[in-house]
Image (tube, rainbow, N blue to C red; front, side):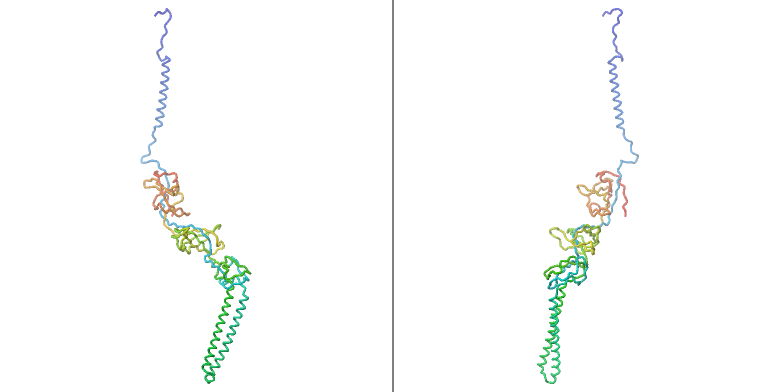
Length: 389
């Protein structure tokens, strides 16, 4: 190839100053930077935590546990029923009756045994009794005369003026007169007794509950009940209980009765347990004796808490017992400090806690609280809480 003199041929660049070479260096530098960042991130993420101190283990959650043991817990039965007089005495007409002239008592009054509650007109009966009293006097006069004749006959028979047969007749006459005196006397006393029964009287001391008669009313033995009296003012609650509860109940069991709407309770005790059970309701009646109190009104409604006995059961605070769709349960810490779920049956609930009827024997370590944050099989660090005496 011919070149003109004085003109140089173009020279090819092959060093780093070449444009292609510079691009390759830029790409290589970027790749190295990315790799460095990736290595740094990997090293930071893969760094292992400090090893636990010598003799240590995994970090465990501390939980408070208690060994409940077994304590005497009262078995309390809850029941409802009606308040009534313990011994209610219906009072009616004992005699033949008549027109009521006076009524002497009102409901809520106390009466004594034999006290007159109401009087019945006795004008006719009084005249009848007077007539019978007069017949008694006539019979006594006849007896006096017959006795005198007999005495004279006895004085004459020894002289032969009167035969023995005549003496016997006079003796019989005297005896008949004496009998008529007794008959007349009995009739008179019967009339007096009938007149006394015209007064309507209280059969025993007690509290008048109701009055069903007014002055001017005609009454008889068929008039039914005129007064209701609670003997001695004693009341009772007739508590309805299931046959299962009746089986564990005994006479003398203490009870607390609260009338509906009242702000206080009344102490009593079971004095009678029904010997039969209603076949339709499967319930029987426990009669709880109560002392008189103006707030206890027969016919009212009340509730009762009956202590039917006691038994030794594990007792837990409410925080230890949980409930879900499967029932009541607690969490128990086993020998390996792992949590396990234990189904239980709740007994009586009181201010002292919840008695566990089934599921615990009292020697387990039961989680007291925070059970909702535990899972079965989880290992924990149990901290035992001392039980109060």
